[in-house]
Amino acid sequence: MKTIISTLLIVMLVGLAGIAQQQSAGSPQSSLETAPQIPYRIVGTMSQLMVDVIYPTSDDIFYIVTRPPSNEAQWTAIQRSALTLAESANLLMMPGRARDQDKWMTDARLLLDAGNLAFKAAKAKDFDALVALNEQLVAACTTCHQDYRPNYRRRR
Image (cartoon, rainbow, N blue to C red; front, side):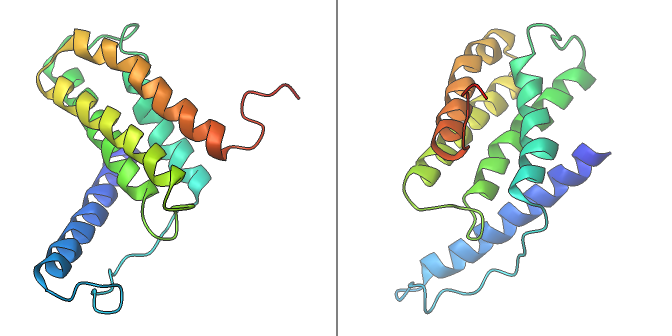
């Protein structure tokens, strides 16, 4: 139930951001001053987003070898996780969450790309493609954590 609510919130936020972007892209004077304000507010902390959304959905992809989907409901769950993972990268890039416009955005796009490919593979029920994506997903996570998580992979 928590995953469904999280997924719905993500889809709504991304949809609102997309609508606002389309509206501002259509005007010839699209600048920060003339762009419409997006009516969103950040609810969870970065830690909550990671622990409650990104970690569990990425784990579904990471551990697919040990828990391969064997029926339609399980494939649907993998699709949901992959979509949520991809869309969570958009949440990381939102103003108020994005730490900067350089490395942070590049790192978030790595997650978006991996999640997008995982979603496509899950929709195609391509188990081998999902397994192959593990390295790309690990690289996306590791790159960002090395850049932004203090003491990441350092002995204490």
